[in-house]
Image 1 (cartoon, rainbow, N blue to C red):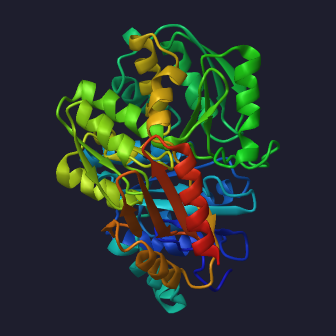
Image 2: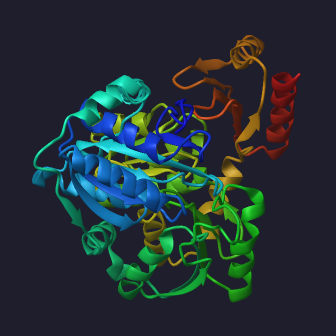
Image 3: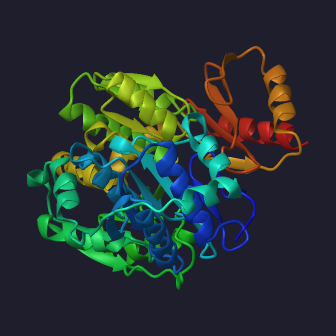
Length: 457
């Protein structure tokens, strides 16, 4: 059993097996979670990784012995655990664990943990305490020394129908027009859900890497990597499809390609989804992250909504969405959150909403985003490994002291014709840079190069 807790990140548990994370460490973290959060009944799901069944089995056996009831929903995506927890709150479900390492390589695994109503756990609200308990072998031995009678009850649920029904309730499918859509599950968990949605939709699906396979025969399921985009793009062009969709392993994010096979940055999808949700909830509040903002704010205000900027990260966005009753929250990283989905992120609802927009407008995806991309060109997120991130941010802040500054998340500096955000990653030792301009590609390239030189020198 690993002796460290290097697997604990700002928002979840993730590490290489067995060096950083193994079955016994998973059980210790799970037990610490149920004790710290006073969980008596919890949902357990797992992704397609080869190590996930063993981890799930160890957690199940250990928690049942401690009197915890477990609702096992088997192979699934992270949002299926979210749904099972928030929809089961009235029946006494107190929390949930999803066993996944999302888009990480096959040698990794981890856990995403939520409390009652699928409220997230992070370092700011319990994850540090859970880590401290799990790292204490004496605490763990004391817990296991107590025999709980009767043991917890195990309930296995194989039907996904309540979850599918909830997805379909989020979008008016009656307006959908026939389309040909390439779907690339990356051998992750999205394929079975697409198959269950298919009978309700007038779409012809071209399926790529569709079957869940934890050996990753087609490589790691991470569509953000440029080298992982071409398979979907090529299939869109070859099949003359209307749309391409790709997911990461646990499908909490989806990535879209237009009819030309062009990868569409998540930033522009945030604006589209904001408009879609405001059509259903006029005048509502929309949350967005601070990395790229101009396009989103303009589209939200034009659609009659109220844009509110919030710190990056699912825990902060979900908390602020609840406080403001925001109908939607979007991150440029392709995390999309919905009030009517328990304030949780979904990788299925976004593409359904985009298909609805395409259907009612009669326009291809390219026509929905081209004008916005020209109005606000972006650098894309650029990572830099530096020895002293705080010193670099301070240096950049001094260099651009004449701009309008915001520090809600990292450093944002705004000028009339361009703005940028520079922030430390919550999960990796890097600085992340995003730059956008008002319709000036040359200025974008100039300022991006200028900033990168200052960051890396």
